[in-house]
Image 1: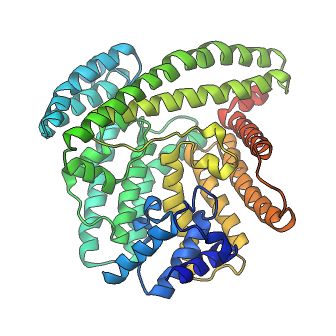
Image 2: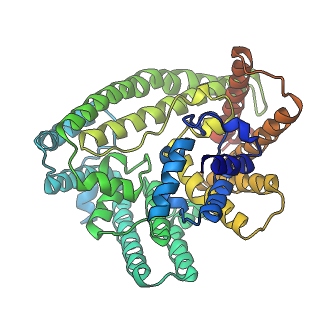
Image 3: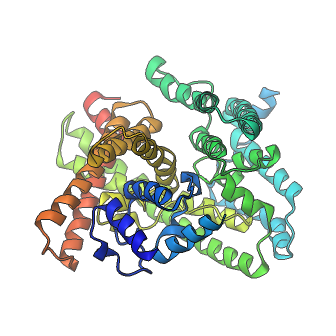
Length: 79
Length: 406
């Protein structure tokens, strides 16, 4: 799942998957993710993992590292 | 009735040291209650009512009538939509509800530009209450707000520490705080932070801003005006001094509002986080008037981009993001008021966000070797700061006074 998420992030931000090596790094404070990329990222997540993430449920502090993203996706898949 | 209210003394929020004395004495019993794990809701309602009354009585008595009508109107809309949404979810009903919720603020903002005087519907704080009500309706549509209690909603709208100028809280966050009492350890931590914020606020608002607002800015404005109706170096001084005044006044006020909220056991979000250290304009909007810019980000920018991406309205992502930035910032400009300088301010910031993104793309392509050093970061800070100061000069309306004499 980690590689899948890294690829989605790379697509959404227009970067290389190698920019996302550190899974504990804060993606917003280092400028990799912004509001624009977040939307593409969320839409891709929804398609890829068949989950529903309403924009109002999206709390940046819960989604700001790859580790947290993996955790959230797993939670949403189990719902 | 109105005459009696008009004859009462008026106590504007956080205006004088005496106000703080009365306010802190009044919330002391609440603090004792929270320390012992109890929230005295009826007492909180009573003192909130008294302080709101004192804010809107005397010469502002007409505003009190508008405020009461406004809150009743928004509560009916929100509760009506909430009940409707339990069984149905038609887009049309949502858009009509949002339109009705925004109607008063649109009338209040457009009236001065149309007829030259303020609308009777207006009152101090209407903009901030509109954000709270509209945000609640949007989240109800999303299904994120799952229960609304009319009394809790009224308390959210009329939460006394933040009523006139924010910070803008969200119903879900507020009602979560309101339902529970913080643990003693947590509450003591909040009180400690609150005391610190209160004193930083005193320093900002009553010491530093005294010099900006009462001494330096008026002096520079007089010098600029004395040079006639054209630009001079004094206008540059006005730009920097106005920026100082705007920051210390508003950041000071926001710290008061957060501090008093903390004493009342509610974690109102912060509004400022060292905005002038920002290295680019995007970072600036993550640090300046945060509760407002996050509101616009979450409810306008993200939603527009989400919809447009899902429906494939644009082939090019950069075109979409540029348009979304412009819509976001120009709407913010209009929200400040329908005058050429607020709208231009919105355009400038939208344009700056677009430019910033374009530069980042260009840099990634052509300056791969350009490393981030202390030097490049400080150059970036310098450019960002000076752009912001220039935009605040537009925002201040001083150029309107200088060029057109009103």
